[in-house]
Length: 360
Image 1 (tube, rainbow, N blue to C red):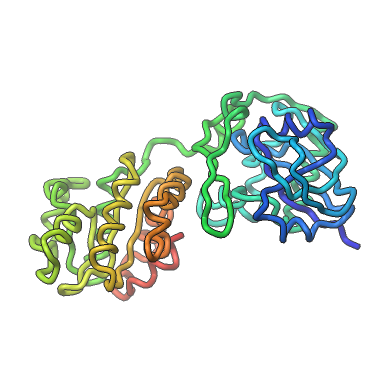
Image 2: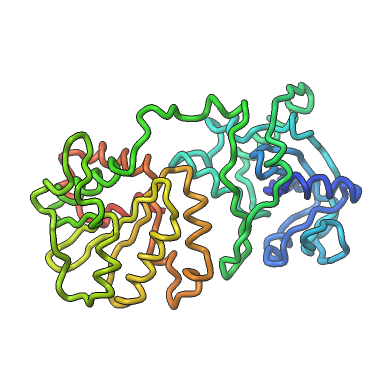
């Protein structure tokens, strides 16, 4: 029977607690029991340390899954358990940075931050080609250790989690770069600004034939000497069918695409400001006009993806009659820029549905 491979997430603290308890039991949250039961004797758990983003070890399943709350970990029970033996255990300075394998692993395909979503919960079954790459890298690190600095604060931190309704999901913090990651970082030169992203959205909407609205307090802004207010289809008044309360919310949304009196799409550009305030405007709009069918988008730097996920999962938004995450989606800067450049003159032939293809 072919061996199965599973992702097993640890923090630095839970990895140390695992070894202190004898290194013979790996545990998972109660909500993961259905998945844990699929593990077979002989399967390998590929252990990943969140915070420092490194592959830290390999465990082999030695018996059937079971449920037990005997204390092993201090902060959580992790009652869905499997007996294991250690195949590889790397110290954090020897562990394999996941970005060192970015050109080989399937979950690095797509947007620059798409890989982060792979490490939100465990266990999940790893694809065989990915698993073999990770196993080979850890075996090589064990045989030929090459110490590299790591962030001890991130190693010792506790991850944030949220209850999505069906599961408890780990949200990695924004991780500080260690020396091993410097070559993976984009240079700051040429990084997009808030004004550039607003201008791109306004341009795209204009080329598609929509009327435009820009947040009232951004009217005088410009990009590369092109004033927002100078666009021929820029509206100075909002659609008349909304009440005053709705209009006060709408007038502060960064960019709107309008088709007559209908709002086709609404965009909040969250460059460095609080994502919560933008989401709150979106939530207010949905609450005040529940029958409107509007595409809502948060557009933000790629590295703020985790923050968007964290904020949209707040109880304020998650417990709405229809959770806000079902209305509002995320577009990374890099994806918007690339799509704008790709479509070029073809934008005039596009329909707003193309946004659904690039949004997360």
